[in-house]
Image (cartoon, rainbow, N blue to C red; front, side, top):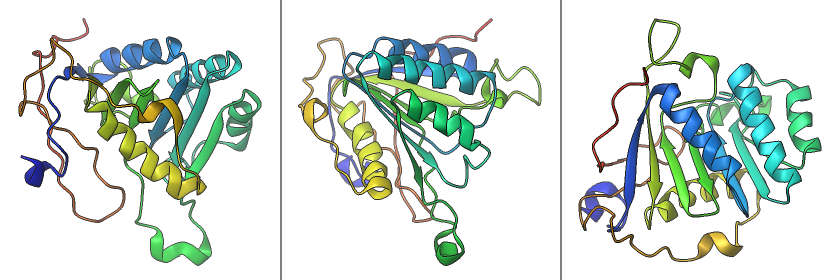
Length: 225
């Protein structure tokens, strides 16, 4: 299992499957609102719009409450985000970094992108999946303008592997290493899925080949309607 997934087998995790933005965004915003010590967030896409404004305000509210908030956005995928929006985050106390902004002298790295879409709250609750922060992911994939995607909410030891994915990109973007409470070992949860039924590791950024395996428990909830 560890050879196939590229991650250690960590028993005792709660894993909830979230379908589309109508389930994913409320769960993520609720987790951010409950943060006590830290919020670590990365996304390939963070496009201007109503849902992005909601996330921005949630980050700022927590930062002003004394919570450490770190945001890493891909320099190409989130290029639509204007400077005023970034400045608003920074004025609110949020640390914002961009992963490999395209430059003329780094064109050979243009395809080395950060596609991870992760959220880790207090080092204890993690989210990972394919949902970006943009209007196209809101709703329930009810028409071609609203996209279908899946995200996971994870509690338990596997959150360490989600955090490791964020920390890798954070260090590459900033040259700084995350430390503190996030690095505490997380004990298996008594009601978590048993050994070898949950293994997860976020994929590495860029065009390099990777493997990623996830299994879920309990069964996913039905649609949003």
